[in-house]
Amino acid sequence: MSTRTVHAGSTTRGDVGGRSVVLAYGSVAAEYEALHSRAALFDRSHRGRIRVSGERAAEMVAGLVSNDVAALAPGQGCYAAALTAKGKIVADVRVFVEESSVLVDAPARAADGWAAMVKKFVNPRVAPHADESARLRDIGIFGANSRHIVATVTGIQSPALTALAPYAHVTVEIDGARVLVASVPDLGLEGFELLVPTEAYEALWRRAVDAGATRSRRRRTSTSCTPSRTRRAATSGRRRWRGCTSAGTSTSTFAACAPPAWSHHRAGRRCTMPPAPRSATSAPRCAHPCSAASRWR
Image (cartoon, rainbow, N blue to C red; front, top):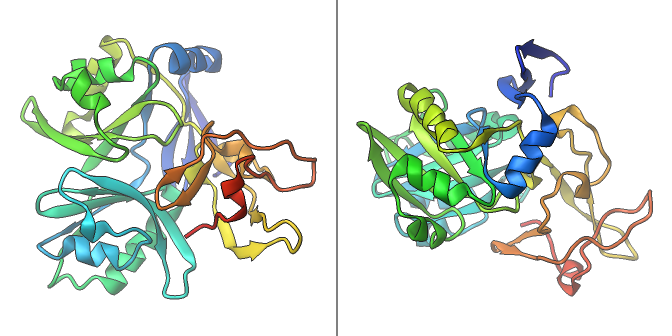
């Protein structure tokens, strides 16, 4: 992230991957309390969004990522890694399959790399694609009361929101605007994201605040870390990680910015065991036996 920050009133902004991001709205303590006891509101519009359309859209996306997107039905989604032909990770992406298209979003730092992959490998005559980063914005609502806030904003019943699998989504119309509501487990807490047309963003943001959500700064998540090429310590078989530079803070371990539930990124499985104790120089590892066999794929 750029070291440049801009303070406007109680709002602090910074640059991530060349995109403007709100880093804080005021009291970090109040934001943390809201996240764990009520609901916190995040602007995640800095992420890059590309839509691939046509009958073969899912097939085209599946050829670029680690998960079988072609097997997903409309309304389903997944988390995946975008890979080169040699298995090098270009971006970690979230995939949302719709009736006639596939919407894929990526972190700001990886958005250009993902866009370049799509442009290079997806024939627009077979599956037209377009960058919708400017046309759509992203409102994240996370925390203990998030489902009730989202229900108030969108009109979707709370039980229906709770029943959504990770990255599953529904589309509703709010004041004439088409809004995609997705269940997103990125922070290790119950949460949802609303992908909304840019012109409807301000009204829906205010509606969420009025419903009780507290504006919050950009949170660190596991998707902010970049995994190194497959490389293991000779004795432990543990995976090494490059430093995470999320929110402008460099750290030598993945654990520093991982969510409470330790992610292994193996076919969407999530280990709920906490990280095992580590020394100041050792790489973090999960206490669960599955860590011995886990690999980023």
